[in-house]
Length: 302
Image (tube, rainbow, N blue to C red; front, side):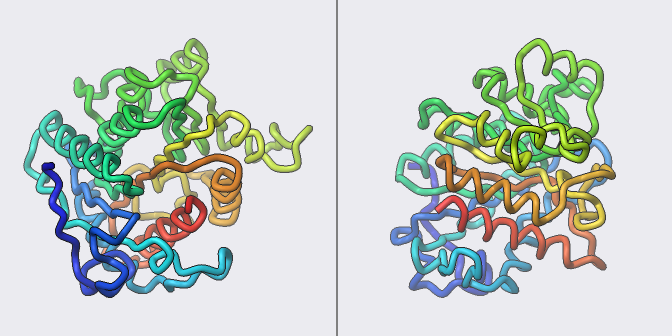
């Protein structure tokens, strides 16, 4: 066992939870911080995101008015100290993330991983793919991230889903909110049957001619076991400016919540990550939005 069983106290952990509901052994939910940032393509600062999200989370109410529960008291939430990967190279950092998550899954924990740039998700998803049969990946993102390499780096955040598709059947990748991609990615999507719900299609009603809501079509494409990877640039920059590669025309809070709620109701969310937050010192609402998103996703999943 390589993973430390130590968990952070209420002054540092997710939601500021007292020891009674945040001890490692008694908690089902584990928060893993992966402050990795070696492949940012535009803005920087994602290595600061896990700390910023944890700090902001202490402003989030423990009680969820929608699900009528306090998830921390129902399941327990332990927050591990950040992984010591900030100075490690791509392969070395990803291997440590992978082994940590694999250890925790083996202990029957529900793992939430906070990035860092999107590169970390390939290591996490690879661990889940080893443990869960018939896994599909639901990716909220402004970008497809399916370039084989970007600027010569196969571990770029712009290539993370290409790495995932090396061990996961591409047809089990479902992307939502995409509105920026290169021709190479569009061709890969066409040739490999990746399921993409482009932002412009969501906006022009492409999925509501026969269905009441576009997210019903998303759920139909998912297998029973679903891993969610959430790049915060899926949101419109008006509600999430603190990200390295913002794109106009993004998703809004209520429609994302409705989609996640349906996935949680009709499929089994086995784990998730949140990546690409780049905190801005004068705009604290961005990390609060990210922390609230983690809380809502936990409530929908469990």
